[in-house]
Structures are given as C-alpha cells and as structure tokens.
Amino acid sequence: MFFRASIVVALVVFVAAFPMLAYAVEVKRGVAKVPTTIASFLDSHCTDCHGNESGEGGFDATTLGTDLRDPKTAATWERVYDRVRQGEMPPKDSNELVESVRNGFLHSTSDWIESTQRRDFAEFGRVRGRRLTNLQLERTLQDLLAIDIPLASLAPDDPRVDGFTNIASAQAMSHFQLDSHLKIIDAALDEAFRRALEPEKLFGVSLDAKGVARKNPKTRCRDPELRNGKAVTWSSGLIFYGRITSTTVPHDGWYRIAVTASSVRSPKEHGVWCTIRSGECTSGAPLLSWI
Image 1 (tube, rainbow, N blue to C red):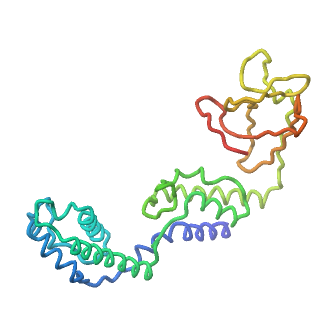
Image 2 (cartoon, one colour; image 1 turned 60 degrees about the vertical axis):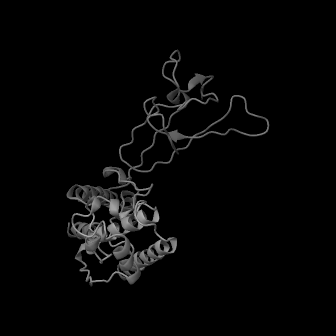
Image 3 (cartoon, rainbow, N blue to C red; image 1 turned 135 degrees about the vertical axis):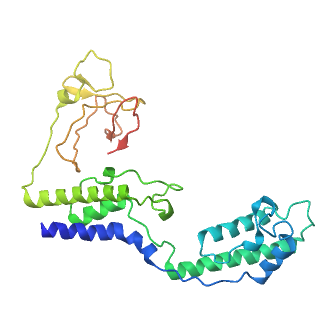
C-alpha cells in the first residue's frame, strides 16, 4: 500500500500541481513609461474627446495603464491600436489625420506591445502553466505503468480552441476536473496492480459464418446474409452495411481482431479488399471509426 500511495502522490504533483506554479511566481512589475511618440499622439488626437472620466464612450485616455504585463491593460492598448488602424479613431468629423502621423503611432505602439511580450516570454516562457490534456494524461499513465486500457474517456471532453485542446487559457482547472483526473489515476493504478498480482487471463471469441450472419434470413437488415455456408455482404454505399452482432469484452483494453475474407466472384486482376470499422451501427449514430 505504501508503494501505491507514493505513486498517487507523485502523479498528483505531476498532473495537478504544475499549473499552480504560474500563480506562485510573484511578478515584479515596474512602472513603465508610454513611449514619447504614443504619448504625443494621444495628447494631440485623443484627449480632446477622451480627456477625463466623462469622455465619449466612457473612455478616458488619460487613465491608460502602462504595465502591458497586465492582461486588461494590454487588451485596452490593443483595442486602441485596432481602432486607429481601422480608421475608426480619430473619427471622420475631427481634424484630418496625416497618414505619416497615424503610421508613426501604429508602428510605435506595435513595437511597444511586441517588445513587452518578447521580454515576458523570455523571462517566464510563453505558457506559464498548463495541465495535461486527457489524451496526454492517458498516454503518460500508459507508458509509466505499462498498461494499455483507454483512460481519456473517464474525464469530460477537453474544450477546443481553434481545434486545439492544449491551449492553457481555455483549460478548465477546478475541483471537478481534478477529481476526474484522480479517477483516471485510480483506474490506471487498479489495472497496473491487477496485471502485476493476477495471472494473465486471455479472452477470445471466435465467430463462424453462421455466428456473423443475420439471425433471421428473412429479415431485411444490414447484417451479412448466409449463403452456401458463408456470411456474404455486397458492395454497397450504405453506411454500416455488413455489420455483425456486437461482442462485449470483460475489460477495457486493446484487442486483436482477425478476419478471414474471401470473394464470391473474385476479380481476375486482384484479390479481395475490405475495411473494418467500429461504432454503434445505427441510423441514429451513423459515424464509424476505422479499425
């Protein structure tokens, strides 16, 4: 039991504590100064309308922060940059803005934001803290404990941002998420100890043609039909055509599937080509995964 508890502690620290390092680092922020070109632009073209707390649109240009390491401050400056770049500010009814002045402001602001981000990345890295995704956790535990059971499905799906599940800002990190990770770890340890302490139990199912074919030959369905002692399916574009009765296994895991295929009318130029796919094989769930 001591060995098992030690593994749990190690895995919890590895999986759960790492993201908290980001919050344990005390970021010392100095008071930065707005570059002269930017400050001059704001004074000349912004403060007339946005020079106090009652500025138009509720925006006070005199209270813009200077610490671009603060996400809210950086987001505000990025919005100011975008409004000027898109020609929304200064508004059309104000004094006409010389293009060189606009470009000078945009160039200086872009350099200021990017240089701050580069220094920040160099000091702390691009990602301050991120937990393992469900798939990464599954594969880590499989490699660590020499097991091959699926584990990722025991946790709620990772949220996706632009198709990716490993974006730190979008990852959920809550007591519920931590609890699901611990359940995955428990399942992995249970399987590892079962394999270490119990004799290996081989499981196998052998289905002959009759076992694969449809049970009632008069029923119209998408199961193979029994002809001359063979389970026969025909070339078809129908989804899940040729399905066989599902088989339940005693444990989650990876199983080897061997299929013997032949052809009623084999083409003269080549042999038999077939695919094996898995899924619910119903009209309500037509999508299948490749095996």
